[in-house]
Image (tube, rainbow, N blue to C red; front, side, top):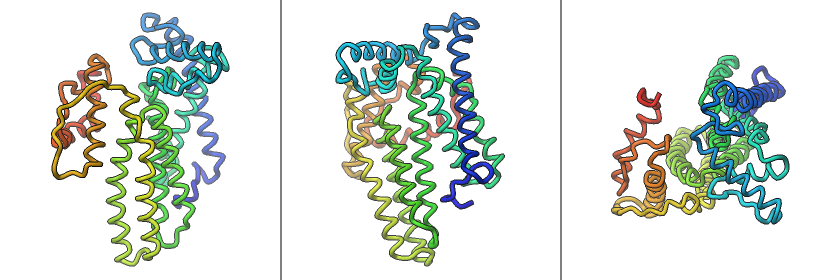
Length: 343
């Protein structure tokens, strides 16, 4: 399958739109059902009011959004901020509340659209791996219908933005690498870079520190891809000119992410410090990035010890060595969690 053709389930672009629309309607209908039927009438003991589930961050997001929307109505739009209390979902919700009513149900179309778009991007990524369109769609369905996904499209949450951003970024890389064959056109390069930027933007909105993580991953990918490009040149699969341009675009993209990595620590306001042992073998730039992420983790560990999303709160990083030694455990969590004790 030609990655630049962006073909849909059969061979026409309208099919992608119809799939997106079906997923959107599913998200809208299920969200209204959860907020207006399931929580108030079937499981009222779990209902925190306004269609929100007890015990989640969305409750504080709702309060922040309502308070900010009232300020905007009183003081004007100059009072609006993207991250009131450091929480972008509240800032976005506040803007919508000013234009509608301060109730979570007004956010349902936006959240459903984020979920549906993420599903389409995932489908396009899968279609680069397999040619069978029906199987590709089936591979996407667990993401669409998995019950825990309802946390980000029936409530007020960051994950809809973050997941869409991560998938945009991955798809951007897939499209970019599609120009590697010598006969491939260059439109894919620009398209891939724009998709990566779209992903970075969505991640930055809700979790600026997440962009630091993406840049770290991008550094590893760029270094690996640079070697691949040079091998392709040696084997005469691409020209010297194309290799140089590809290398330039990859490394420029890596550097261009930097402005989006700023503000992550201030945003999270960890108000903590770490006794950090500087290494002698890692460049300061990389060391500072790892230290910043360790500081964010320390902030979550100390400020929110009861948060359900915390894992291994007894672990603290004090050097790059600590981070490296934790990688096997991190992979275990990524690939195998949630563990039975959390079910």
